[in-house]
Length: 213
Image 1 (spheres, rainbow, N blue to C red):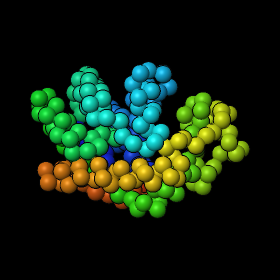
Image 2: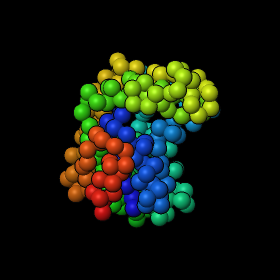
Image 3: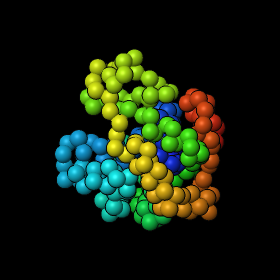
Image 4: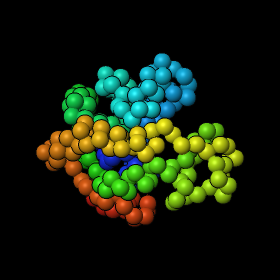
């Protein structure tokens, strides 16, 4: 299975990607994880990515494209892959299509997680992340036992800059302007499958697998 997961920030792409990658036995490739690893490591790419992400904007295509191209050349993608957070615009989608054509590895499907903006803002603005282990909790849906303290390791919980309400609103505007057009792009190629991202995690996973079958 060669799969792309699309949807606005806060739709639960990361959570569903883990379930789908395990179900199909394919690597989960997340641009967000790659960026965060570089940010934590203090690399030049990390510093550049952080300046964009903190303001709710996207990392430039040239950086992201080459990073994905390199990742898809690794041996573990031979039997398939799941891309999460890429492509984010039509130009990236066209670049990816060229790379996959050269590799003779065309896409099988593009799964869109659909969710209203109001639900996204509620989800993201309440999310808290542990500075130590990276575990997440939520002030409404998944409260920690002690406010501000990670249940997993006891580290400090904080709100990421890109989860603040005003930044979330900007991220949604960026998504609408730059990323939504790829949905039409893949729909025209007959690859698009759409499911609702509202509801229980396991229910959404079941619906996603059914849509892909």
